[in-house]
Every structure is written in C-alpha cells, then in structure tokens.
Length: 125
Image (spheres, rainbow, N blue to C red):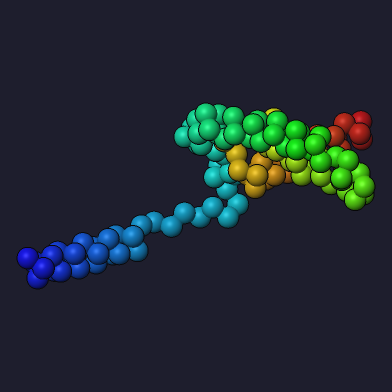
C-alpha cells in the first residue's frame, strides 16, 4: 500500500509544479485596473473588516481615555491618540471599500494627478 502511494503522489506533485510554472504571468506594473478591489474584497471588507475596525476604534478610544493621564505625564498624548483612535478610525471611515492601505494610497495619488491638470487649466484662464 505504501509503495502505491509514492508514484501517485510524485506524479500529482510534478504535474502541479508544471502547471503552475505554465500559468501566465500578469503584468501589473502600471495597470490601474489591478489597483481596484474586487467584489469579494468589498464583501469581506464590509462584513468582516469594517466591524472589526469600528470595534477597534471604540476600544482604542476607551484605552486612550483611560491612559490619557499617563500619556499626558509622559508627553505623548498626541501620539497615543493617533495610534489608538485616529489610525483605526481612518481605516474604518475613510479608506475605500475593499482597498488595502496600499491600494487606497495608490488610488488617492491617481485621483490627485487627474485633478491637478484640471486645476492648472482653470488657473490659466
């Protein structure tokens, strides 16, 4: 029985490696279509990530409130508020639906470059 499993396992492994090597490579260096989140990412973000981030924001606000006297004595109350409340809050309410933080920054930069030439044309008129 043990001898029968080895050739089958070896052939499955070899065919898997060959098929993965033959898969087409995607050229996503400058493609903005690849920066858009898919529907599965949006669904998962709205059902899982956003509620967890909202809870994280609420818990962070509570922790910030409890530890604010110590942060005030240490001189880092602004940094504590940024890390405990603002960062999860921005990810909860400002980040685009389904986007990773890197995708969000990329889309924000792309949007700014599109708006920049329009503002330059309006300024010259």
